[in-house]
Image (cartoon, rainbow, N blue to C red):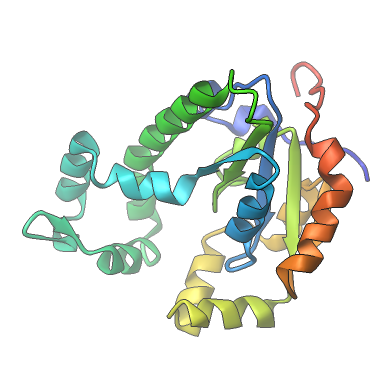
Length: 224
C-alpha cells in the first residue's frame, strides 16, 4: 500500500505537543458506528493504552473552567448547572458555527489530558503503544501524528443498524456522519483496511496479522 500523505500543518500546536511519544501511536478511522472502540479494546489486550477522546471530551464538561465557558455558550443545554447531553447533541449537529465554538473550548482540554496519559505510560514497559480513539482523528489533524492508521470497512446498512441499537434515529445517524470527512477520504489516509462487519473473532485475526508492524514506530519524513 502506498504511504498516505498527511500534512502536519493541519494539526494544532496543542495536538502537536500531546502526540509526542517514543512508542507507536495507532489511529483508528471509520464511519459512525464502525466499531472503533471495539477495535481499540481488542488492541488494549496486546498492551496498548487506549486514549478515548470521547471520554475525555465528556470529562471536559465537568472541568470547572470548561464548564463555565460552555454554560455561557450553551445556556439552554444546562438545567440547574447540569448539562443535558441530548440537548447538546441536537444543538451542535445542527449548527456548524456553534459546534466549532464548543470544540475550541473542549479540544485544548482533551489535548492536555491526552498528553498526560502518554507521559504517564511512556516509561511503563507494560505499555507497548497508544491507541488514539477519536471520532475526529482526521478532521482534527491528529492522524498526522499517528505511526499507523487503521480504517474499519463496514457497510452502511450494518453501521446504521448498530446506530439504531444505540437508540439513534436514522436522521441523527445521518447528521453525525455528515459532520465528518467522507469515508473515502478516511480510507485513503489509512495504512491498513480492516473489515469489521461481522464478529470480533474475524477482526482479531486481522489484527494479529498486522500486530508485529503496529508495535514499531514509523519513520516520518521531516517536514511531512
